[in-house]
Each structure stands twice: as structure tokens, then as C-alpha cells.
Length: 207
Image 1 (cartoon, helix red, strand yellow):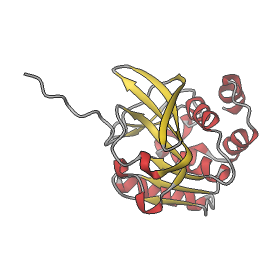
Image 2: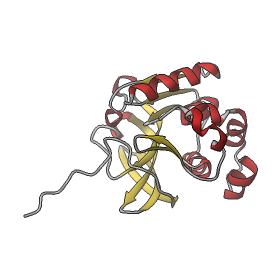
Image 3: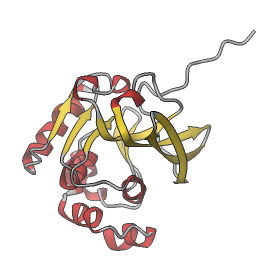
């Protein structure tokens, strides 16, 4: 996976490569999907949720420039793969997952690889983790149509956030950073994914 998907995508930072070589991806998918855990495609997790393509996730991490002292918030961490990778790269990880079964399985999988610096919170994804804020990095593990109020406030000055913004069938990864109290966005690359629960744009009333 690293040699055929990650490096050819111009992701060469050692911490990303090392973490993806170290973490057994098959431990973070349903058992029926274990044989395709390293395929070059999203992996269905059920209920409209997907594990992002490895190249997409790696490129998001590359764009975020994760540092060893970062405190990271993951929103919609599914079965814990993104938390496992980031636990190898950053100082601490808080993962929020509102599906109780996914949160339980993620907690067990993270414990199995001794990711002691990662915790899983079973609560609404769109609320984030305000009691644990502020964070240096927020990773939304999937796509969004909009950002709920209050999430950006959970970033400290200089903090970064990355998400796949979807407009119909087209998506773009954007990275934002808090600069002088304001969030400034930049385009990173194109990608697509299912919308994370709670991140669908409000329906506009039409006459």
C-alpha cells in the first residue's frame, strides 16, 4: 500500500510512511473486509460510512503537517484507523464517534495496538470535544457540506483543520488555519467521500 499508493502520491514525510507501515489496517475494518483492507479504494463500513482511501488520508496528513507535540481531534473516526495513525505521529488524539458500536470497536482496536495516547468519545460528531479543547489539529474523517458552529472555536491560534468539502458529486480537500483569530482556507487536492453525520448543509426553504 505504501509503495503503490502513498509514495506515488508524493507523500514522502517519514512520520506518515512509518505510521502507515506500522499500523495493521485490517484491524480497523469489519472482519468481512479484512482481505481488501489495503485495496486502492474506499472501504465500506456500513450505514453509509467509509474508510477513506489510504492515499487520500495520507495526503490530508501531509497537508496538515502533523507535529510530534500536536493535540489532535478526529471527528467521525469510524473504527479507529485514523486515530491509530495519528496516535503514532502526534502527542495525543481525541476521536469522536457517535455510532456506539463503532466507538466500542475503535476503542478495542486502539487498545490492542497500545495506542495509549488516543481516547474515543461516543457522542455527537458535530459537537466536537469542547471539554478537551483547544486542539492544534482537527481532522474530519470524511466529507462535509458545511461546518457546524462551535467547531472552529475548538482550535487554538495557529491550529489547522482539514476536511473534504463536497458539492454534489465533486469534492475538494481544504486545509484551514487560525491566523490572528480568523480561519483562512486553502485548496489542497480533489477527493470525495460520504458526508459525515451532522455535516450536511441545512435545507434551504423554497417557495
